[in-house]
Length: 106
Image (cartoon, rainbow, N blue to C red):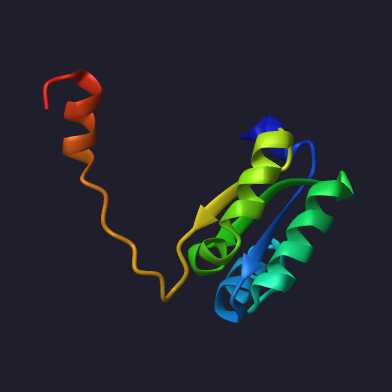
């Protein structure tokens, strides 16, 4: 991850709460509420050349999944990662089950 971040900055796209929370640790953010705005910002950030990682809240990512896939398939950088927001319905990860599957015993 260190090599990736040496290539540019991190930007988070999401709701006001998430953007403000990441802002407290120095991450740039853009508050988006509509799919059109999210698509516009994703395209602009991916072409800017100074962004290495775009974090998108799950709620927003669900609205623009096609755009995220197109950018991810055509560009190596920026990396787009989906993160939960405060209101996301995220299921807990069953690490033991994943490990068993990876080892071929589950």
